[in-house]
Image (cartoon, rainbow, N blue to C red; front, side, top):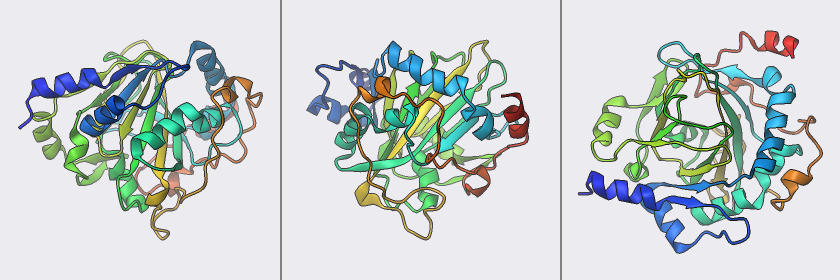
Length: 306
């Protein structure tokens, strides 16, 4: 049986620095992903790219018009905006750029398509926690037959223990899907089972600098604490599903079935001039999502203020 020391060693081996000129998914990177369910790519987005991404997220009506809260077990709410198609704005170029999409394809072993992107927002002092879950615990209910999918968590702000950084159980993707149930407004994993798994897979805090990215398998158990600090914690999370894992048509809505994804060069992020036109992004109406119970009560007020 693997020991905590074994998994701690594996965590270190899954941490890599991204270099635009030389990066490729090597056998070492692929082995790390397969063994513990994730890889960290430090500096995937450079400061100039990050500045442009933030200008879209912070200076447009994207959040006020489309944002909503998902209550946690304590009543506090992390907030989010979710869209199902990339669109043609700067964030669409991020979803389609080669360093994200090609890396995802290499890790999953086949062509992928864009499943969703969400902006997760934990505001200072009030941002709620994200309960323990597997992404496949949600996506199973949307018709995915296999967990052949992953998420790419991109730190927009510095993420640390104080402001509710991501926590994972490395290697937990090997236990397959755990039963999930409603926890307040969220869908959470069976906590009794999670507590047992913490004794096998050491809880690891994913502290990240802006621009760092964590690619993680859809069965990896993860959570995040509330933001009790004075610093904001925003993250962009892109999800990709393998083409061969096309969801059951009857269960897929409101999430997309296979739709070919047109990759763009990494330079498209800085070259893109569309900062405000979000047509074609297919923003999710949270009332249609059977895996959450959203709070949209302040959306109209936010939109008015914007």
